[in-house]
Image 1 (tube, rainbow, N blue to C red):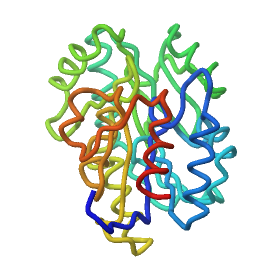
Image 2 (tube, helix red, strand yellow):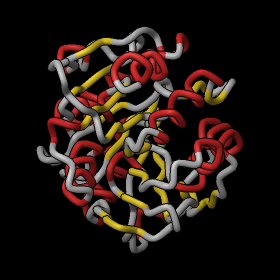
Image 3 (cartoon, rainbow, N blue to C red):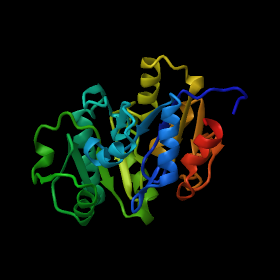
Image 4 (cartoon, rainbow, N blue to C red):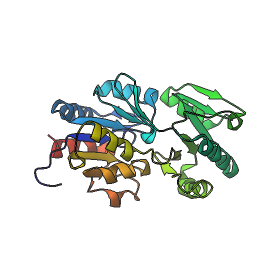
Length: 267
């Protein structure tokens, strides 16, 4: 970190960075985030989740800041208004659904906060139950209009995730990236609709130079956000492929890495 650098905008991934699926946000992380906000830092949540799935954490944080949802597809104001949207083109949605079917992988899309899929699958049953999301089965999903889709999520068994990521990417257009967010999650968004692009857009809107931004994440869905930020960080449990992009590698997220960063570099 450059001596005298002042961080005015801090972007945080949620799952496996700020929060744990079982325990939520720790008291120390919560206190540190609130303290940073109290010092006037714009603390921005940048997550692969949609608004409804993020709501319990956002309400607990009470930051009154825009949120980057669906891996960069949406930037949403505190009042729920969509400030920026980059939906997956319909041809890419259908191409991804066909590719997943070819590989025998389960795929689901999002319409607002509703999870939509062609066939029942244990993953979607668990996923929607844990995140309290509405869901709907559309047996003929691929043959109906598919517009305003923020992302497609393809599920792979975690042990085969990297193999299936490569196989899936090989069946998609070259400008379409297949990124990872959590074990088994393969995420496909619109080309260029990334957390990094959304963060850059927000920084410009807030008149904050890139050099006064920081970001913390853990997986390839966070890669370009970490690379773009003035001080890009990853937690110790991060995907090994993104660690070389980080200016700073923090402890494991379960050791309150976010709080440690805020206490040391902001407060």
